[in-house]
Image 1 (spheres, helix red, strand yellow):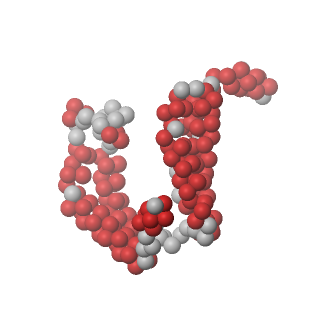
Image 2 (cartoon, rainbow, N blue to C red):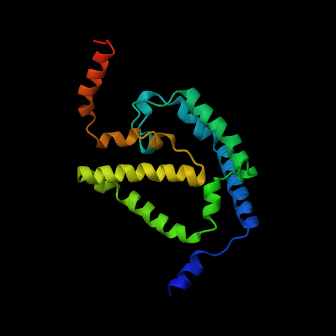
Image 3 (tube, rainbow, N blue to C red):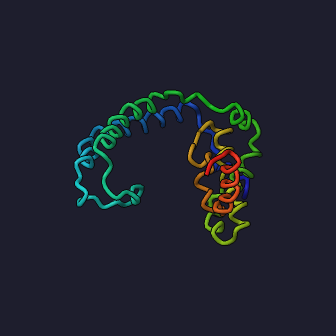
Length: 184
């Protein structure tokens, strides 16, 4: 049973199929952005009172500046074209390429990834769980960088995980260091 499921899940795909899929997605994305240029750009003219932040912009108090909105829409077109043409698609991490030769590594890494992703709410339950989860999530992003060559700068900086730590405990040490340097 397990072998049959794995055979269904891991069907070999020829490189030509993957390339054609990339081209199709790139063409669709380019076409979509160009045909939706007016609605996508209309957000730039919203007044503060018309703006209702939802989704990814829930934290904004007012609309993004028009230059940011229009610039994002304009930049999206050449990026979609570059994606469809396969710009830099052959670049990969050497470690990631060598891991492909060892498929037994992927199942444990997938389970570990699920554990980190689904374990995020548990990090709120207890300080020790939070420490383990933050280190695991940070290590996950280091692993993505090393194996896939994809940089997620914000999580790699560890800044989003600082909320799980008692940063105020560092204040006396910082004040002492400041006094040693001659500050007030």
